[in-house]
Amino acid sequence: MKISSQAPCRVDLGGSTLDIWPLYLFHENAVTVNFAVDRYTRALIEPRAGSRITFTSTDLKRDAAYDSLPDLLAAKKHVLPLAAEIVRFFEPEGGFHLETGSEAPAGAGISGSSALIIAVTNAFNRWLKTGYSLEKLREISQNIEARLIRVPTGCQDYYPAMYGGVSAIELGCAGIKRVALQVDPEALEARVVLAYTGEPRNSGINNWEVTKSHIDGDRRVFRNFATIAHIAVAMRHALEKSDWTETARLLREEWSNRKRNAPGISTPLIDRMIEVTRRKGALAAKVCGAGGGGCVLFLIDPDARARVVSLIEAEGATVLPVKVARKGVEVRVSK
Image (tube, rainbow, N blue to C red; front, side):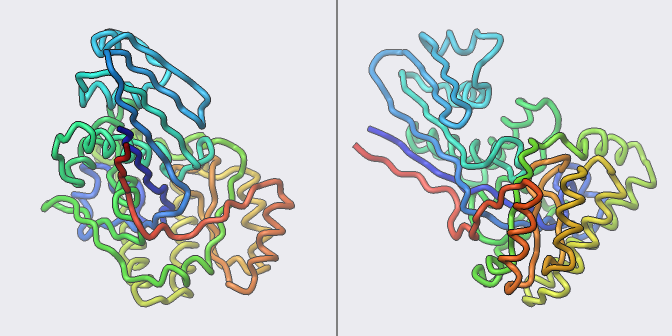
């Protein structure tokens, strides 16, 4: 038997960082807006006789092996810690080989690690028949990632991987709810250019430090997040109306606010790309994720794609062709 799975990465549009508990509890009607892209993460489990466990990461080009589950659980360090932490949770009784891979460039800021965890946990859930719901697997995946990075994690990154499409992640006292936004995916695709700077992300926003400051009552941080929350709510409504002019204005406002909050979110290359494309058809731009490198999202006039792409590539960045991923995680079992 072979169990294979894939899950898409995402691009965030507004409300990022608010999705870290308990920040969203202090801002009414908090929401994060994002969409899934067809850059996929993948997992393949091949059960085997005996107790031996082996891992291969095709994108990281690393391998790991353990004589048994107790051997893995006893290890102090792991060559592939993400895979090891997931196995630690599921504790499969038999031996197997796990192969993982990601189409997200290193440090791209498009949530490759979160999408990969969703792909792997769903594969183990199917193989072991543990019966977890998709939402429960989101909670498990988020907790596993928090154990890996040793700070609280947000929830938004998992939903595009789970469901695909364009999403509003509603955040409040009643919990977390994903709402599919009725956005024409082809209209969005026509207006999006995703550029990879070639510089792995170097956390422009330290989410843990920001979270602590917010909880400690820093008024400046509170005001910043109040603005971020307001922009995200407005962006949701603009997307639902297919008001691309307003969406672009809000994306510019989001980026301006993010830069004021954390100057390290940008780099000289990012600044140059945004400046040179601004008068040639790029209506707005922002970095993906925490910034400091990685990917930059450009919202463009559809007729200006060739010009914008040429200018980005002239700066030394790589344009990643992307479409909206219509589906989320998919798992297949084969003989």
